Length: 198
Image (cartoon, rainbow, N blue to C red; front, side, top):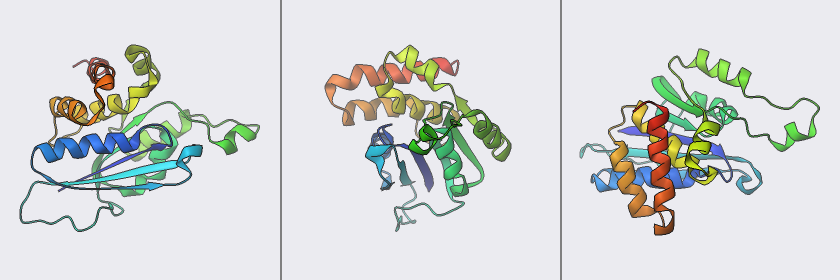
């Protein structure tokens, strides 16, 4: 049983990332349950996708939601959202997060803007081995921010041992994404691997 949580803000593509994970797992004949908790997502609010995967025929996945302390992997498209869902990560679990802050409305209205630095420092202390992904550099390599979600997913699959390979992610992209976006998303996978030196 694998529990993977994907978090970000509205418009970052967390739901598609969860769909791609589910597609890759279903191609292996694994059982899959997914769910999203969305709060004002279209206005930049939090979006959390729960993905539960199982390949043991004796165990059932009754609930689509991951309980506190049970996530094997958290993929965060925004650092503050990573901190928000940190209680879900199990001891020894893996955290992969983008390094750029997305300014919430409250920060935009205040005199002190929200910066990612202190949040990233906190994550590195709270979760030793946190994988920090320079999303701005990735976007530059990809040539578009629209496939950053797939790039972060590729980074996470390359860094965490969850049983789904990056090649299976490529197959899921071809199966689940509209053909006109295949090239962009496959380029994002390649850029992610290059950023990790793989």
